[in-house]
Amino acid sequence: MELPFAESWKIKMIEPIRKSTREEREKWIKEAHYNTFQLRSEQVYIDLITDSGTGSMSDRQWAAMMLGDESYAGASSFFNLKNKITELTGFGYVIPTHQGRAAENVLFSHLIKAGDIVPGNSHFDTTKGHIESRKAFALDCTIDEAKNTQLEIPFKGNVDPKKLEKALAENADKIPFIIVTITNNTAGGQPVSMQNLKEVRVIADKYKKPVLFDSARFAENAYFIKTREKGYENKTIKEITKEMFDLADGMTMSAKKDGIVNMGGFIATRREDWYEGAKKFCIPFEGYLTYGGMNGRDMNALAVGLDENTEFDNLETRIKQVEYLAKKLDEYGIPYQRPAGGHAIFVDAPKVLTHIPKEEFPAQTLTIELYLEAGIRSCEIGYLLADRDPVTRENRFGGLDLLRLAIPRRVYTNNHMDVIAAALKNVYDRREKITRGVKIVWEAPLMRHFTVKLDRL
Ligand SMILES: *Cc1c(COP(=O)(O)O)cnc(C)c1O
Image 1 (cartoon, rainbow, N blue to C red):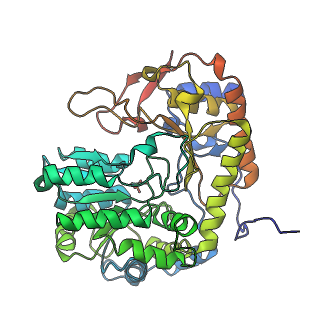
Image 2 (image 1 turned 30 degrees about the horizontal axis):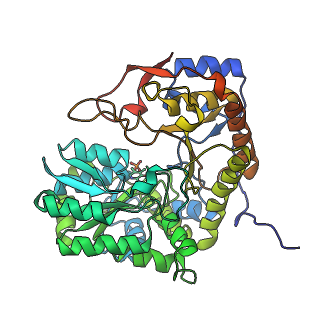
Image 3 (image 1 turned 90 degrees about the vertical axis):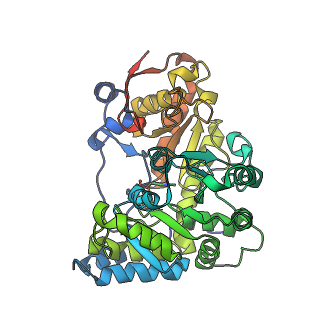
């Protein structure tokens, strides 16, 4: 018989996790003001709040850490990292930062001024935050199909070339660059095709605008190009990665995702002017240029992580696990953003909690129910995260309201996936009885979802 699929690694070190009782969880979630970000990790059994910085490093990464060079300037670890990034992307200038948002902060300080417009595909929340805090606008040019969670198309993260062209035709003088997020996190970890990246490049060239890739999950994006896009079946992930970045001027990276490190990020670019501009902000915000926000040991681990995670086997193991969970949800009829994304499953909450109006935050309500059911921590990628319109201060209810089950890299087994699916099924089976959501008691003016305090209605 054909051998079944299995992980491309084995486990060398484990970390115990603990179950809790429903009574304990009732108390803890109340104390957390019904915000899963406010729970303590010991209060969580299976933690799917994010795939960011939560992956397991390999033995090779841990070995590289021991060889970290902590010299203040010119550390060998920096050059290990820089050389690996240049090999994978072709970008010759590299600035390490403490995480992805710091890369945004440093680069955007140079590139964005008040009144600018930055078009792209569903800007990530910190990206949008760094644009809006500079009194500029993040213009979403994602394809409309991304909003229909039940539509199954291979590259649902794409930029709509018509929307992008329109933005440039009308406001070229206000647009400092175009940003493409690979994979499109906010739209559900959905990939962007090579074809689409090429179309964006053509439009950018027509208007002489640079293109920045927000690259947190570029390797997962390359996996989807290999497995879904014609002409790429026989290319290696590293070849595809290089071809993708050939279409950009630079990248910001949250290394906590596809770099498989717990903390880190960087800016990389081929443009000397971006590098020179960013340098001026790196030193005061992050640190000297050859470490930015990172330890030498962490730069070493990242160099290895980037190399490992641009290998097909490692990516296949990961993405197949996400697919495994998706198939279970299919069995139970639970609606999610289709097809399953690279790093997470995004459950379409308003389709589950049909009795809860948008003003009562259906996806947030579902995160609370899933936690109460089995101690599984997920997060809301929906109306709370969408924040308020900076001008009208109205809640932005125009997008999707999703519960995200983010799967950490190389951490949980498929048995854990079975538990997650069963818990969600139990909630789904009693969905008719869940008739009231939550209301906001306190919120921060920017990126409110991390600290928002809620009460149950
Ligand atoms: C996580 C992420 C960021 C921000 O990176 P941090 O390391 O969390 O600061 C930016 N863009 C995308 C697409 C991300 O997923």
